Image (cartoon, rainbow, N blue to C red; front, side, top):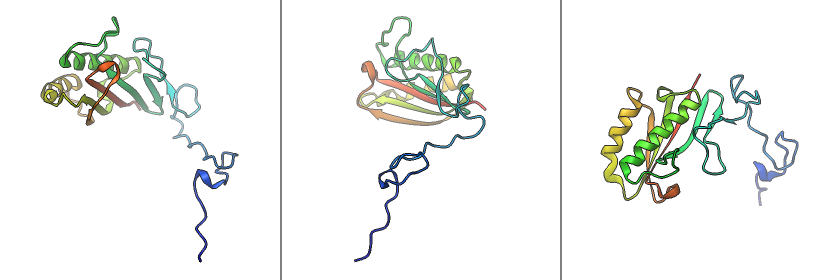
Length: 167
């Protein structure tokens, strides 16, 4: 019977440059401009006092020339209340995203990718969502995905997440 091929990957027990058996080496930095002001080359949270996290995550993280923004729902930051209808939630989520981008030194012109999360019972709202989207992003046309979802935080029926490039 032929011998099995040698194992590869973290379970192989071989050191991958991390100094510990079975552990993969940390990813290399992406270059001199990678990382935040720490100079570590690793993604770092961006301070966003106007857009605080609602849980154990960062609202925005800088990774080299990229700013990755966590999803924003239609919660009014002044009251902590979710807008009561779809259009109100969409408009507030876009306003929250605009504020978050500004806190990171970006605008919609920097957004390369947007992901929209829409409640499964809400696809009939896509024409209105697209109208608001076009109004907000202007002539910028980032790549976009739209995902139908069964659940969003706080009972929201709309969420938007963006990635911005800031060379």
